[in-house]
Length: 454
Image 1 (cartoon, rainbow, N blue to C red):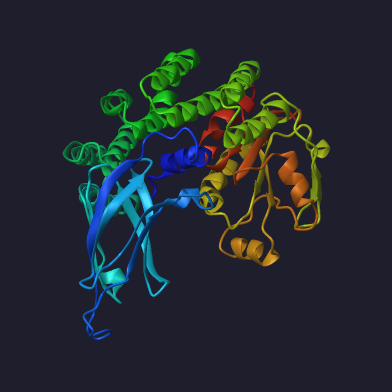
Image 2: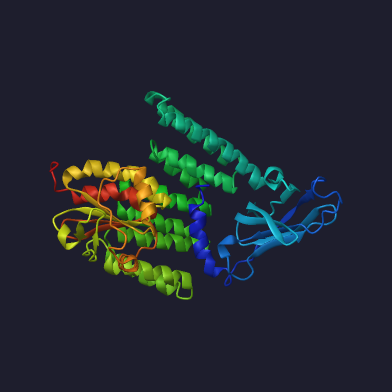
């Protein structure tokens, strides 16, 4: 499910804090019945089936088991699960010491989770019942319907004159899911979807809906993703910075506050306010000096601030293209270009590819060039990628560059990583992961002095 971006970010921060300074764990009842079909076992003894719930995000960390019980002769089980926060966790069902199925289950305080199933057809018979899971079913039903309508719209089956009315309708349908199942994970997913649709045609309405759901922790990330950029666009950088400070003030969750602080450092960095970003980072390092995960993040971002910040000369690089041409940064002086570093097998890179083609088609008239350094291990993978797609710009040949040197020099932590570099060899911006959506702003800056295509 694509609504877990914030949960993943929060899990990364929770990783080290799991064993220190923890608040009191939350608790809920987990119970149910798991039986075995007579065709497999007609003994009517269903004992010994294991039900395990673990926090998969803390794999390798002691005490990551949140719940474990085994069934009695009738197949019944019941116990108390303890967990750090309302979230999805991994549910594993086993028999005779062998795992026979696993899925995700939501644990929420005082929200009894009932698990029922019959073996061996676990995939067909497993049911999870709780307020959270009922809300999730409602959200998924609405979301599936919206995806079908979206496919119709993309195919041209819905006239352009009706598209706005459709958006308004689905924005409200998602919002109804939020209102009906308020304070569930599914309600936050629905509110986020409603906000994302409003962002395309009614940004003031979008901001109002974000405000109405705050201070829910999940919605703080939604506010960072949607509210902050709009405030920055409408009222300026300082207003966006103040907005982030206000978000930090309305939550008591230290991990959420850390996420906001990280986002603020990135915002200053991306806006070429390097001195202020370094000051914020120094304070961050002092505040989180006892957390290894925080210090690791700080080291990575400090490298970017020192060597890969906007306005800094790009690192040296050199490679030979698949066509046999030599490419290096000194030979590219006078050209504005995007340098991509990613496995071509990466799903995000593949999803971006068509958009990158369009960007190239538009901006090549202004002199934009694109180069790709693939991190795949096999030429077969690269050739397969281009068997299905047009190869428009040069791609580095495997073996013509030092992979580890490229990764270290360009501080590649997420893939794809891209760099927009101006005609003087100076970095305009580094884009990691899905941040490439912002590249148009950088290109407009790079070509701001160009009045017409070359």
